[in-house]
Image (cartoon, rainbow over all chains, first blue to last red; front, side, top):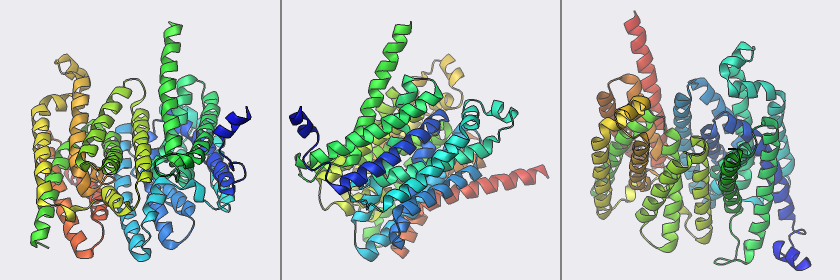
Amino acid sequence: MSTAFRVLFAPGFFASSPVHVALAIGGIAALVSGIVGTFTVLRGQSYSGHALADLSVTGGSASFLAGISPLWGFAGTGVLAAGIMDMIGIRRPRGRDLATGIVRGAGLGLAALFLYWGTTSTSTTGAAITILFGSMFTISSGVVPLAAAFGLPALAVIAVLYRPLLLSSVSADLAAARGVSVRLAGLACLIAIALAVSLAAMTVGAILSTALLVGPAAIALRLTSTPGRATLMAALIAVAATWVGIVLAYDSFTWPPSHDGWPVSFFIVALIFLGFLAAQLAGRSRRAAAW
Amino acid sequence: MFAPFMVNAWITASIVAVIAGVVGFFVVLRGAAFVADAVPQGAFAGAAGASLLGVNTLLGLGLFALAGSLGIGLLSKRARRDVATALILVMMLGLGALFLSFTVEYSSEIFALLFGEVLGVSTGEIVPIAGLGVVCVLAVLVLYRPLLLSSLAPESSAARGVSNTAMELAFLVVVAIATSMTLPVVGALLIFSLMIGPPAAARSLTSSPLAALGLSVVLAVVTVWFAIAASFETNWPIGFFVGTGGAACYAAGRILARWSVARSAV
């Protein structure tokens, strides 16, 4: 038993303070992403989530230039971009994807410029990689309360708007008839997504944060059709995938070929993807059994 | 700006823009923005893998672009399309992150792959790009009618004997080919601005498909030319100009369209 324990958790896992910070911040990010993600998937806004993540790269690189915590940049541009997307606001889903894509393209252009300035002025080319692919083990412990402060409003939006959001996700007309402002609910949801994504961007990196947002929610919605239960399950799956990913990444420091560890984000994404494939199979066999 | 070493850049970028304009027209028509966005980003991981193994980048790009497109096509039959796209995309990007962690001293090359490096194209590289470009345009020309039909009216195209599934897969393959050749030039993150900005602008300006297709090509080429010239003058990354140029195209298109509607109403 104890050997199995030691194989699973490499020596020093529980004593290392970067690991504590990673577990805390990864947990917060995963929790928020899982919960907000359920609504992202229900509303068919995976693409908006992905684009907001890409756009937060712009903010991340800008804050790198300005020398402030990337979280401010991630969240700031995320919320701003959510507003612009809503303003272009084309109601049909097809047009919405188009508006999303246009905003995303312009934002990434800016990101290229900021990163270029950043790399030429400080000659640290690693910045682009850190922003894009995350660096969970190098986060300072001071960021944890900041992360919690960004996560809480996102959860609050979901908690307060739970019913109207759900209703407007299922049927916009019905929601409007019941006096729900569909547009306002949509904007609030986009902002919650932006906050969740910027948290995830800190941990798994901007371009992989979509995995935490969409993956666990897609798995949960495959396994249960009750929205409340799916939300809880998605949060649990997200946190579990993140923590197991951190454990594996810590273990991988002894693995070939480089002996300085495989990226955490790879493990988290791979776990979520495998989970999704398994849920597909489980969902199908259960449906077959119901026949 | 037109020095000998710049000639290759002008030629390649023009080829890329024509392809992006043609393929992008169908991307906008089919509402496939997310797919057109995901395939290049995922293919970027293939480039990272190829350079890890020391093989030609174009091979890695092509392989991943094709695998990604087909994966999205297959998985989206079972799950929601946007979810399937997102998950395939992040899985490929995750692999990319893994490949990158295995290589050292590579970040400037990654930056080029993500944000584009049009000025470093050699004469030898133009030939495969032009070849794949011709394949792309030919494929779209051959498929033009059925593809248009299945994009605009999927129900009636089935009745006319056009298989929507086959069209979807064919379209994804074309996107994959277009991606793997345009990616090294404008970068993984920005091909997509070229594939969506000009065609979207063209569509809001004219409703005739053929005119929109032509206009979309013209706008894409103009955007790229402007981007090269500006990038040459300022020394800033070309991706910045392509990204903002694509969005500017769309904004201008929307404003012009509204203006002409308002005028015809008077």
